[in-house]
Length: 308
Length: 267
Image (cartoon, rainbow over all chains, first blue to last red; front, side, top):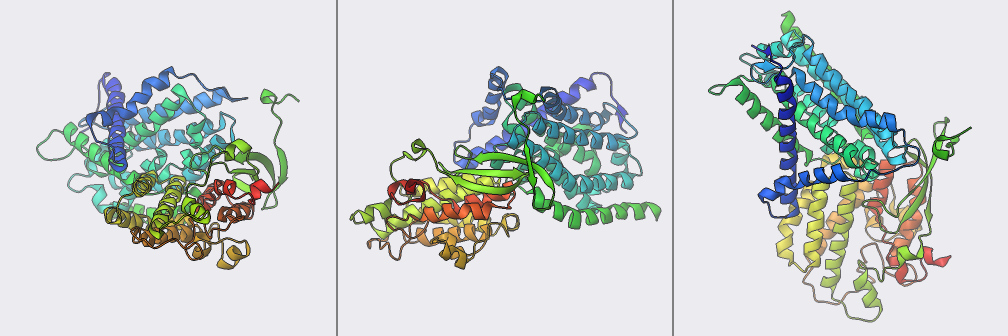
């Protein structure tokens, strides 16, 4: 059973999330080095983190007429929303806040990223970053509804919006097994709200890194951290939603949660490299004509099961 | 009225859907990641749709690089030197891999762009065909058969064989006779053919063996025609599609410095 944790879980959750995100960054760096034919050493894992002190010391870039307030607000929103989303993710038997609407909380935090990234694109008052911000809105229109139906599928299967109940409802059979489509759509959604890999469109290289392009120093660090924190948070949430949470033989709940999360994270990092960026102008059509109807049908499965 | 930062407000104009929208004038290049070096395209954007595009004359310094590296075997041949067909094929395959690396990067597939770049470097370093072949096969099938990449590049930058020959384009862009998808697949096919003839010792015959961007003639390097095509192809394209179109034609502006008759040097 999942119970609300004591005060220190409030500190432990962000630390765990940061560690997971760091693991994903290091893993991605490892694959980068292997592809580029560079020697793979322990130092390879640490390479991306060398940018952190550099970013902290960097001279901020000056732009003509930026909207500083909204820009800052946007940049900060992305990592903060990612951290807040972990409040409802159970780790073994403990969760920071056992909300009765946990699934909605996670979704709401993820939607905050919409505002955050759009403002981050708007703030600098520069063409490419603005295009990047708008690209995220277009991408959002394509991924958000299928993602919501994927979340609803899990909630319907458990007949509860409490994440602990969703875990308990998978006693015996994981939701990933009898709602595979919702699981896949959810994972695609995770990449989309992390704007990584095939969903890196808002930060596309073709528009000089879009929303990331005009940021420098700490701002850039926050946005980059935000996308990897979201990836880690999305992977962690996949476990209680679709993979039976901490259930498993032999090991304690927290260990199973950790193992499954790392596996999902590894899968996402691997998939990121296998696809080109999905341009929203093409992807929107696919999302609305194919993904959304199938996601709705998928939601019908647990709904009918609950009725019958 | 005081404008933020003293900047003027955007002007407005009719867009393709009959709406009146802000117009934004920006120039693409000369400094943009994975952009043909030295190319400057001034575009008028509404939203992210290119309403107008014109190729600007680059500054002298941008074209001060000596020689066209990718067309070098053909330049040397034209100067009366003897160049082997194998050496030319090697340079052409490397040139196409270089173009592919840029296209894949613009398409947002950095992992495969790295692979293309490594194959290019190995070819330039003189790696034997047999050493490159297995990796090339894996790369060519992954990229060439990728349904996702084809789906994302289908239907943009269409250029029929007829239009190409009217514009004076030769080489892979003309032979592909289609859209961005057809053009990168043409590159892949050409690379595979070229890598099989790296050891060919017979002399290069420029009348049948094209340079990477097309038929090499003094006074009209093939990239000249590609550059002239750009404004027409970019008009009406979205920014992301426009970048892909440019990357799939990949004009080499260094060629225009070699022969003085090029579009840039004329005025």
